[in-house]
Length: 534
Image 1: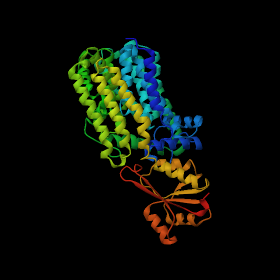
Image 2: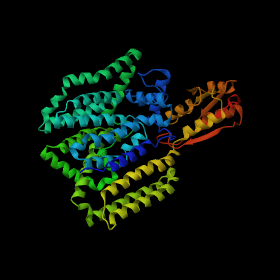
Image 3: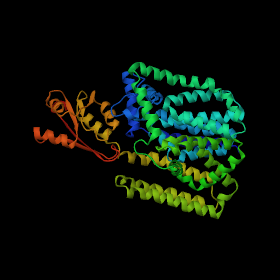
Image 4: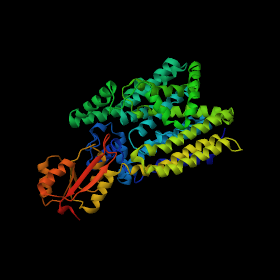
């Protein structure tokens, strides 16, 4: 089926617009703010090997993502938008890959449907809004998977080169995950596929050493700098600790990742039983492109169900084939006219009604989400009404409208609702901007309140003030406050009490950060000497 090019342009235009709405939205703590700081330090200090930024040690990784951020800073300046730019490009690139690299195998309609399903899911678009390493890793992991599919089916040599280049960059982005994924996919092909010997086209005896060479050279260079301290730490933190247990308390029983994926694809949950029914049939046949896509899904998901750590991003590579399998089930149901039946329309009516009721009720159940109520009470009835009209109008139910409504819901949510959410997490940015407006840029900033340790606090303070440092010793803080040097102190409550015992009642500012700490709100008490005032 040949698609109208205007439809294709419209769909990808909406997706790109949704991903690009980023400017002015504050950084997320912890990871994103740490990565923003790594890129900033690399640019300012010229150390491109070992990532470094205050309160960010546990977020250090292999450097490719940070290099991308630094490059974006160099070209367009330091901001939230430029920090997220590479993640926008890679997220959009992944969505484009589904359509342009796979349409000859799965057809244009299913390829476009899969692109919309992935864009309307709840995790992948967020990779362009919370710029962690996963958007970059997902793009190159997807390229690796597509390369395997194309080489198994068509023996295309250029895709061997693309595979190893993508593998090398993925290693530099996050290390072990690409080895686990591609190793699992290749292993399943060897065990299950009649075309297993086509894997020899990859010549792993040459490809693996060459693909690992950039990572080795970077690691060797870091050893020359610090004697191997950073590499030893990475091995302990990312290999030993994450294999033997969970990190940050994010754990769960086997099946947690699968449940999470189903929730992330919530708008399409009704079609998932058919996905797994079809998946079983393909395992019996063991041929065709959908069998390889099923292997792709299993390789990106199953092994992590047996890991103690259950970070959702671990299985992000499985979201791409999952979206393709959902798209195939959806298109098959539509072509067989089943979606136009009273039974399916009744189920979809109840289903979308429950989803929008749940979304509308959420801000009434969470105290910090109060200001979301008006926005969601306007948006949800509009989209619910559109869905009901599409299901029951006289012209008949249209799958394209169903998909378009969910895509538009994402566009509207990221454009209008996300800025409201930002008001709950932008305290460190607001604090830094307020101080910048009343204090001299040469003011020395002492951060004595480590609660939550949000890297964004240092990132935003450094964007305005020349010197920002961590200091907890009361004597040094008091000496700085008494000196003629412009000084501002960011304190905890008991530190402020010590100051007032010595100096009497002080003028101070209070900022409450609801989301800077993983468990509790953070209160910042800020005082400064008169030398600091503009």
